[in-house]
Image: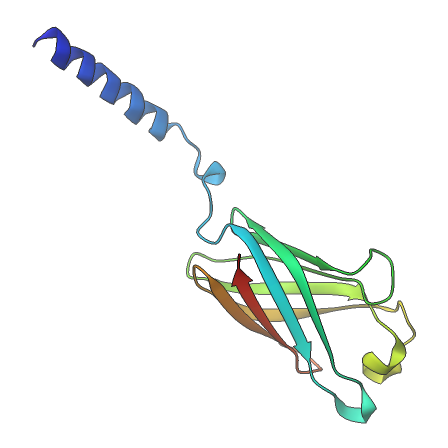
Length: 143
């Protein structure tokens, strides 16, 4: 084997060994990136006002985290969850209720709440809906 072919073979082995040593957990997830979330809750039963939130979210290693509003203030919301390889996800929304006309049962402002969202993503978009109580829809758009 000539010196040039030997050098090429050694370089190939070095590159392949480096790739083999990359842990899967450190590799980028399919859905990773910055996303915009639009949460729409239409007017509900018993006079509950409708509302629409738009806020940023980030997906890293297929784990989503988004946040709307000011932490510990009325109307604050976090949205978190893991996306499966097929794009399906069960997300958890947690927050503090906004002003009482927007809250189920007109709860006091800043009353804690949580609910699940069933969602489906593809490479550039996604959609979901609240799975309990009030009907709310979510749209996800990758930036």
